[in-house]
Structure formats: structure tokens, C-alpha cells
Length: 124
Length: 414
Image (cartoon, rainbow over all chains, first blue to last red; front, side, top):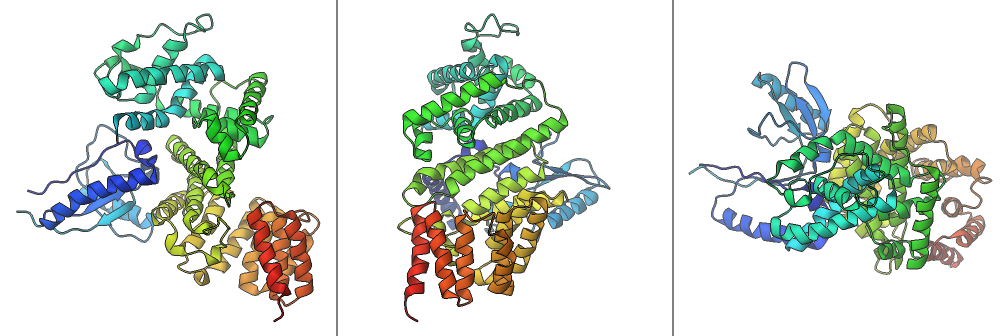
């Protein structure tokens, strides 16, 4: 079984880390990732930009584009995509297209990635 | 991170919200600050054992209000609040409080707090110092170091600023949309001033002043979270990120300024640039152009150029022309002239700045740029004269050293 592990923390606190703290934390996380990668168990790893860089696209025939992260509590995170786009407009267009295709309610949050390592893993 | 470091970070990030709400409650800056300090002391005593509350800002506001309440019982307008012993992560009282202090109220509280610091009666230096003390929570010695003045002088500056504000009366009513927009504009300008205090430093000062840049970016992000759909706030934060991304390459080993074209671009901070570009993208989607968007777009063109030679000077010249229309200023025209010089040669640049001489006669960069254009045209004698004027107007040792270099080069036989 493949598992997605989602990271939650206060971005204000994390964003206020000194360069030394940042480097130290990333080194410790990197060591865990290296081990998992050596074992062939690590898929893509991504670090998202802060929520201030996010745009939310509400699903619908005429999707509503809102600045900021997805903030509703009535809906839950059900999946994600990583898409290569030339611009925010292009990424919003992809989100809108996915929204139309899904035909259900809900929203997509479009958030640029800060770090992306593709990784490779096959479900066992 | 140790527990205490975690608590410090949580307190720092909760500070603007907490102080802003306490200011609304006590309507007095000193009382609000004291109440916040008291709440922090209790947090330091309680959180290591009990763990941090779900919403640290709400906890600090509640505890701060309780602790300061005796002093102002006469003035208090609200019902009694539960003692903080009853507040913990498991307690519903906190959730209730967090509900009452909804996002909208936080937003106006913090905007008011920042806006109070931009009081028109205050000199800019006083406003910045006050904002750093009250909103950011920097200590007086930290602020004094950043401004290169003694602690006592800084303490006095802040005390004077507070007194001015107390006399002037703080606007406590909820602002209307127009007023809110005006406040936001004034606050954005102050945040950019804080950034520039840090960014313009060079030499031995640079290290001490660098935290001002980081603080300004933090304030920009705070404003972004409160006002997620304001393109100018998005662009201001983008502008600061794009400029700060160059900081490692901006000064050489001796702390001397390295010109943009000579900077080692591999030392620019790629993550900061990417975030700045992402924010600018968001801003542009609104199709509501403004001066911060234009400036951020100029910074973005520099950031996107792989080498100095790849710089899109035509784009930069057009953007400066746009900025000139939005905010006519001889300094903007001077900047456009530099771009035009790259694009069409020094002759065209000299023509463009010719009418500015009177207004910019006391401006270092005017004479510096003029000297460079004349130099490029081979008019060495005039170039020397222009650089001579510039050196007398240099605002820092680094600026003077740069001009002296140009003069030395000009006096060498070819």
C-alpha cells in the first residue's frame, strides 16, 4: 500500500526559523528521506510555498477563483496533483478543467512548490 | 528545537494579533504592552507543562485582559472572563473566545495597530521604531542597534512617539472600506520603509540592519494573510522577497556594494525569488495595476535574467515609464534613464535627465549616473566633474568608495 504523509505545522513559526534552524531541520529530514530512498520506498517529496502564495479554484461550470488557501472545514483533503505549468493562469486553468471533469462540488487549491524531488516507488 | 525555543517562536508569531486586540480593549498602548508581557510570563510558566494552547494568540489575549483588568476595572466594558487555569487545550472556553475574535476583528485590530504607528504627526524614523517595538516586539537594544543609535536615545524616541500618539487620539471605530484602504496604503508604505532601512545598509552596518528586511517581509506576509486579495500587498511582499533574495550577492567581503550587473547570480536565493514571482503572478491576475506591482515586475525582470547581459532592458524601460505615469518623480525618471542608457545609449539617457538637474542637484545617484553616462561618451572632463559632485553627496562610505574608484580610473592615462 502506498501512503501519502501530509505535513502540518504553523507556517508563521516555520517561516520565522533562522537559516541555521532551517538547515538543521532539513538535514535531519533529509537523512530520513535518504534511508527511505535507498530502500526504494520513497515517492515524490514536495515542500509547498506558504499559503500566502496559494489561490483557490472552486469547482463548477464557471469556476470561482479566490486568493488564498482552501479554508473550509466542511470538505476534506482527498487527493493532489503535481502539474508543470508556465504560469499561475495555466495552473488555474488545469484546476478548473479537473473541477469540470469531476462534476462534483468542492475546490482545488493551487499552491506553487518550493522543493520537488520526483522519487520513484512501486506499490508492493 | 527545545520546548522554550518553540514557545518563543509561538509567542513571536502571536504577538501582533495579541497586542492589537489588547490595544482595542485597553485603548492605551502602554497598558496593552504590559498586559501582553504579563500574559507571556504566564505562558512561559504554564505552556512547558501543559503544552501550548490550540490558538496561542487567543490564549494570550484572554490572559492579558485578565491580568490587566484590575488596573482598568473602572474603564472595563466587558463581562468577567474565566480565569486562565480553566483554559487548556481541552477546554471549550478557548474555542468560544477564538470564535468571538474572528478573522475580521483580528484584521482590523492589526491594521489599526500598524496604522497607529504611521500617525502623520510622527517622523518616519519614530513610526518605524514604534512599529518594530510594538508590532514586531523587537527589544529597544535590538532596534537601537539596527538604527545605529544609543539605547537611551532609542528609548526616548519610542517614548516620544507613544506620547504623540496618545495626544493625537487613536481611531477605535471599525473603519469603513475607504478608510480601510487608506490605512492599508499607509501601512504598506511603512512596511516598505522598514525594509529599505535594512536594505540600504552596507559595510559594517549591514549585518545589524539585515533583520529589518526579514521583519518587513514577515509583516508583508501578515498583511497578506489578513488581506488575501489586495494585489498591491501581494506585490509589495513580492518586491521585498525579490530584492532580499540578492542580499548574499549584494555586498562583497568588505561590505562594499556590488552593482547588480556584477553580482554573482548563483548566490541569489532561488526559493525567495520563486515565492516573489508566484506572488507577483497572483497580483497581476487582478488587472488592477499599482506602483508596487510595477516595481515588483521590474525586480522580477532582473531576477529572471540568467546573466546581466540577458536583462530585458526594453521591458524595464517600459515599466519605469509606467511607474512615471503613476507616481511622477524625478528619481523614477532617473531610473528610467539608466534603463534607456542600456537600450539606446548614453546620449539618449543624458537627454532624458537633462531637465532633472535642478530638482536632483542634491541627489547622489543623479550625479553618479550622469558621470557614468558622460564617461561612456568619452567626455572625461565632464564625467570627472559629475563624479566630484557625487562624492560630496555620498550617504555612506561604500557609496563614496565606489565613486572614488570611478575617479581613479578616469585619472589613469589610457
